[in-house]
Figure 1 (tube, each protein chain N blue to C red):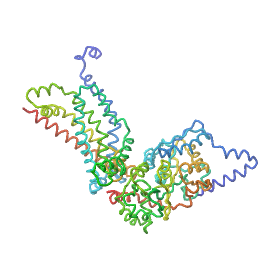
Figure 2 (tube, chains in turn yellow, green; figure 1 turned 120 degrees about the horizontal axis):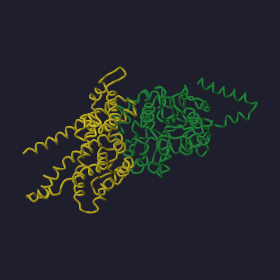
Figure 3 (cartoon, helix red, strand yellow; figure 1 turned 30 degrees about the vertical axis):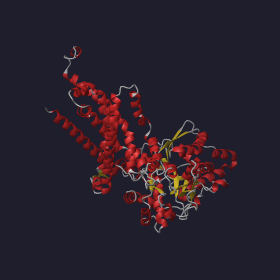
Figure 4 (tube, one colour; figure 1 turned 45 degrees about the vertical axis):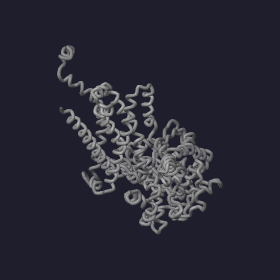
Length: 292
Length: 347
């Protein structure tokens, strides 16, 4: 055995080489098992039980109540809106920053991450000052003639969407920037030397190659947007109820842990399903296009 | 109650017995037990409230007893959730509540009876648990907060919220904020209902459901500042804070009565520093501490022996002047009213 181990890679017994990936994987699995899988499993158990034993009553309560369907719909709508906005704003920003030759590019990239360095609470208070009836947004809209009276964006869904988009934009920009950086500029030149206009080259080559990053960025932003709590709670107030604030209300304010767990499970399963479908859709297209 | 009488009797007996050595007895009474090197972890209300309580109550207590007190900031509801989660092995010795959570805590067996709190006997019976699980150490009076520059005649009644000239300038807290719940109950009372007949409350609230609804007291300065809000139901303590931030607001006591919020303290069952917590609670009930709290936060003293200086007495209602609500009934209906409020008012 010791001789075999000393005799180099080829002489190593099979179980040893199999051990390496297991050992590399183990710490991560262990941390996840303790801090994620186990709590999630107990949430699932909590959501499917009451004092008498196993029950699906809590799920029935959700399914039979249009109020909670509205909240789920509003949450997914919020995720979608924020993802689209950050993608539209983030794509050009990340592209320009990645392609820029300027020595300021690195500094500018650092600047885009600034919102991440400010706590969500402080940031949301900033929005409060802007969004109230006598705030800057309302005054600007009125002086531009876009609104006839005072406009209150505070405590509304549009307010939450704007604030969350600002919070999550840096993540989108950072993800896309890395991907654009890794795409060889020569590929674009090659396309253009073969007669493609720059816009066509951008569309056919760069954006296609960046697809993985776009998927990653949108999944990241989407999942953070629908699970965000601080911003919807502070900027949205009582009227813009989303899943995260509803879960908080059930568990912390009404002490109905089983129903809170039910809401959490439904949110998790929905997101998991949507993410897998989104990933599969993009990957499926990739395979189709790869065919000669 | 019996236990309290017993405490008092024992105290009298001890005093009588100590007439032989009066000085020793005086010393024993005046000096808090020494807790040098001991720690006290308590929940706190966060922000400036927590800082003020720290300097008005806990710092003097620490100085006197040698203990080191730390407040962990959390809202009352979150504090109860934490207490529940840590049942059997509490990391926090003492809890402060402002939303009636102490009754839940007692019912769920999360708290333990206070012991050795000498001033407990002086606190009125309706401000403490009959079994001594919790005691109210301060009271916050609720009422109507309004902009003095926009509303010249001080509001008198909860019915004033429906004056047409205030339309678009009204705000009220969400029902998950305790004041939002009390607002609903007081509206019901103003329009012929009660804790047992909440219907008129919802009917009234529906008429102003389009107005601004907020969640937390931290929104108050911006609401009165940038939000163009003139009138809302809130409390003396926050009125004082908004006044200090320079806004022209005032507090009015409604004729239906000011509902009161009890600021209570209780000790977690199995708390490692229960003895320190009990001594701290005794300090909180001291008139000196309660005057300091009234002066710095405009909270009403719960100890009737507290004599406020005349300049404060006008600003802080006395305990006897407050309306009292049937909290047991309200607490039992909270979940149902919240569900209804979410659908009929916030939707």
